[in-house]
Image: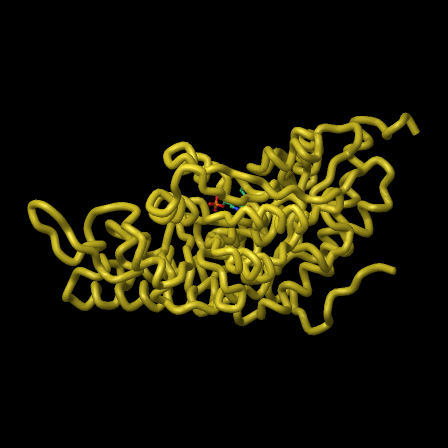
Length: 418
Ligand code: C6P
C-alpha cells in the first residue's frame, strides 16, 4: 500500500516560504534531496538577515549606543531561543560555527584538561569524521586510547559491544544521535544513563537529529550536545554546543581574545562568565539572529509533525527502493528506526554516476563517503548515494527521484543483463 501524508500537514504552504524551491535545473523543477548536507532557507530567515544588517547591525556586548544594545538583545534572544529549542538554558549554550567546531571545542577545552595516558574514549563506527578526528588529535597529545562500538548488519549500534566497553570505565563516550549515512537513530538517553553509571562523560553529535526530531538535552542528560544551524533552515557559519553549565565553568577557554575575559593584566587574565568565556572575538551575530528565526519557523510547523512527515517520505522511499533487484539499501529497514534519509547503491553503477544522471532531471542527491570512511569500510564500499528529506519535500518528489533511477539503467544497462 502506498504511503500518505497527514492531511493536516500543509506542505505546499511550507514550500511557498522557500524561494529556492521555485528554481529549475536543466529545465526541470528542482527536487532537493540533499538536506542532510545542508537545508534550504525560508524567506523568514533570509529576511531576518537583511533586516538585521539594514536596521540593527553593530557589535555585541561592547557598545552603549542604541544599535549596539539592539544587536546584543537580538543575539542573546537568539541564544535563548536555540537553547530552549533543545530543552536547555541559555547559559549552557555556546554559539560555534557548526557541529565540527563544537566538538573540537570539547576535545580541546575538556579533552586536553581531563584525559591522561591510557584513558579510554569510546566512539562508534557510525561516526562522522567530525566526531572522530578531534578525538584522534586529542588522543595523540594525551596518550588516551580510542575504541569503536561496531554496528550490526541492520545498521544499529551493537549495544552488547558498547556495554562491554563501558565495563572498562571509559572517560568519555562520544556518539552520534542520528547517523548521516545509515539514518539510524541511536538510543542516546539509554547510552548516557549507562555511561554515567561508570563515570564517563557523554558527548552527543546532534547534527542530524536536532533538525528532524524533538530533542531535549535535559531528558537525554548528556554532558555535551553539538549541532549545526545550516542543517535546520539557518544560515551557514552558525552552530551550537550545549554543555552542562558546571562543566563549562570548569573547562579552560578554547580560544583567547576579546569578549571572553573579565580582566587582563600584563601577566594573566581571568574569564568572563559562561557561555561568553567560549566566544572569543566578534561572534557571527547576524547568522545567530537568523538561527533564532529558523528555530521559530520549525517550532511553528512543529517538530513532531516534521518528524512524522519525514517518516512518511522515508517509508515511501524504502518501499520503492526495496522492490528494485539492482539496488542495495543501507541502514535499518524500519522507517521508525530512522530519520529522513536513505543511502543506497546500484549493484553495478558508481554512486557518483547516479547523482550526475539524477542531476540532469533536477534531482539533487549526494554521493560519496559522506565524511564517514569507517562506515564505508564496514559496508565494503567506497561511496554510497543518499537521498535525504526535509519538511518541504513531497511524496511526488520521492516518486520522481525513484522514477529517475530508470535513467541510470538506460545509460548503464540493466543489472545482470536483464
Ligand atoms: N554531514 C552530510 O552531508 P558541520 O559540517 O560541522 O556542519 O557538520 C558535521 C557533521 C557532524 N556530524 C554529522 C552526523 C553530520 O552529518 C555532519 C555533516 C554532512 O552528511 C556533511 S559531510
